[in-house]
Image (cartoon, rainbow, N blue to C red; front, side, top):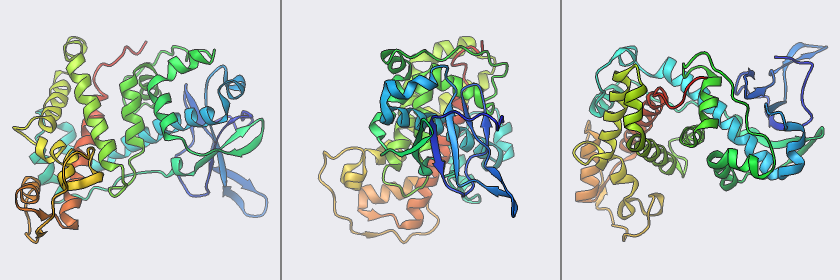
Length: 345
């Protein structure tokens, strides 16, 4: 990282707590967390600058305004957060034998694996501390605008053009390894679906956040619809047919009633069970008849008891569902990103 050069504008992450490591890629930079204290030697900075590497960065803020500049940078920071989550998930949370397996993975195998392996959501916290921008060297607080962030995540290149800003330069990436940050970031810039999936994934930080179901289901639907549109193209371009088959079958299990749909969208859409926490509010909310006290039951039985008999899952059973949703979605995201979405050149 070139410590001698910092731009006069960017996103300020205000926290001395460890979050994302320093980054220097084709598309964005995040300054080093270390600083030198004359009395104590090295210390951790209380503020770090994150900025998008774009040739119009210096003129961007006056053209788009503070709020859009802030939201645009937060979307890019979410790409980096998603990359951070991806590396941690791949390196530390997927069992070695599952990485090597070339046969399509069954969701009941995931459920069995999670009985003996805990599953924490990895999150650096950087987005939570990104509350300011730097404008001509002046630090300014900007209120989060998640709606605006969604617009930048879905219409980035169109918005740049509307504000008379240049498109991102086409950079040749030598590696198509998804652990290569620049390859992943290029995908997000080129393809809207990758941008949306990374944005949603980065913003999942807790099993109990109020939009957990919304973000999980958005990811699953985006991937399923992308497969429907592009399966033939992926099959033509892929040199790893087993990855394609893994992605197709895992997505099918999530979306097909013959498999696990009732454990996923059957719950996500169940306003009669979840009320306003679900994705819909069209059905009358049912009263429960008790709390489930059964031990060692699978996810399908948990859902069946709730829907059929009005027996509400207890906290541990809800957590079992949450972890199944999160691991399945994360594993699908990682392997979907391995499909040939775009050429590296």
